[in-house]
Amino acid sequence: MNSDIDIQNIIEYIIYNLPEESIVKRNLENINSGKWQSKVYYQFIDSTHANKPGSK
Image (cartoon, rainbow, N blue to C red; front, side):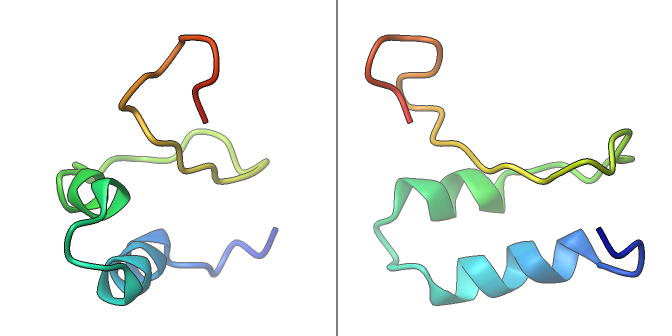
């Protein structure tokens, strides 16, 4: 993956393009900045039913 990717810009772009009532949008708006340890991949998940059967 390209190391010049600014994940914060990607998150802002996704937030801008999601519907106002989106759970994903609300979760992304509450993300705290941090240092990414792994450069293998980025993954966004819906935490509504995390770690339960059928979660996405």
